[in-house]
Amino acid sequence: MSFNANNKIVINDSGAIFETKTSPTISSNVLTIDCSAGNAFSVNLNSSITTLSFTNIPSANISYGLSLQVMIGGSYTITWPTSVKFPSNTAPTLTSTVGKVDTFILNTFDAGTTWYGFTAGQNA
Image 1: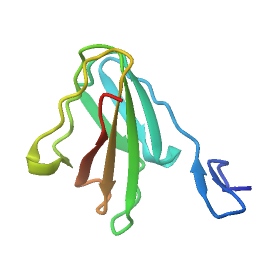
Image 2 (image 1 turned 135 degrees about the vertical axis):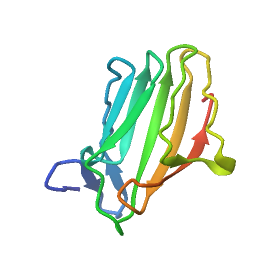
Image 3 (image 1 turned 120 degrees about the vertical axis):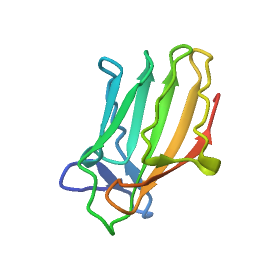
Image 4 (image 1 turned 60 degrees about the vertical axis):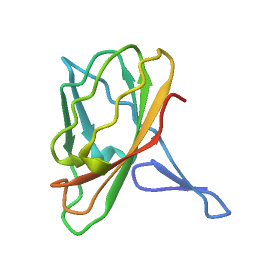
């Protein structure tokens, strides 16, 4: 196995890539995702997120994607920024069952001006 300079990525002898999960916290209904921390994020949803922001996004013409795993803590919501575009311009409704998980994939190709969002799984 080998690690990158930040000890975040592991490549095994077969060429499989593994990345360490980062777990940012919600503070005063704000969630900030630091893109320089990696590509795999897991959040304990213990309050609604009224502001979701992204920092340290790679520059334009560089593809960057992330997975966001939301651990459901109750009937909370996420207010997605207008830069996040879901299919049919409809943001997903979160699962409300405590202990369940919703997973989303977000990709940008223009330094975060537009994020393409997809629901990878819900109520898991």
